[in-house]
Image (tube, rainbow, N blue to C red; front, side, top):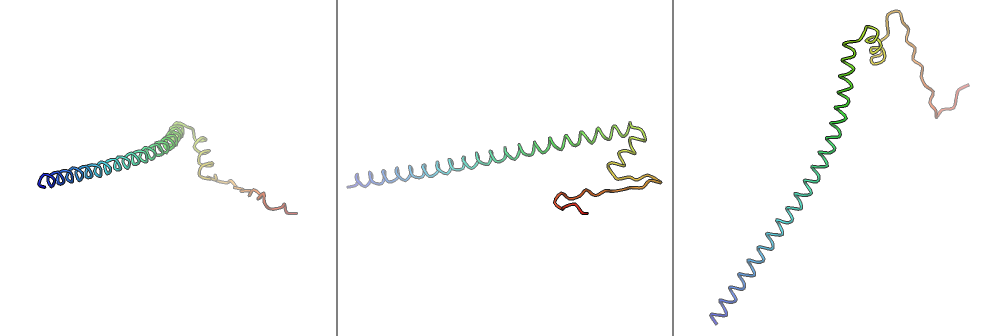
Length: 109
């Protein structure tokens, strides 16, 4: 009887230990999947951010080139940039703005 009791207790402890190990491994495995998904998400965010940074770097390069050309440019070049970029109107000049007709509306007679 004692031997059967010891065997039952030993078997129960073995099964309980095995169950604890299975549950612990399941949580570790599940956590690994969560980390892998998080890594994929972060890699995607990194890729998007790198693309945006490249676009901004291109814009910065063009602006630097424009600044350098304006620093080295003549008065006419600076004036042209002021006219096209900032709408400058010179002294004794008249500015006309023509509105484009909307394509949806029929022409007026």
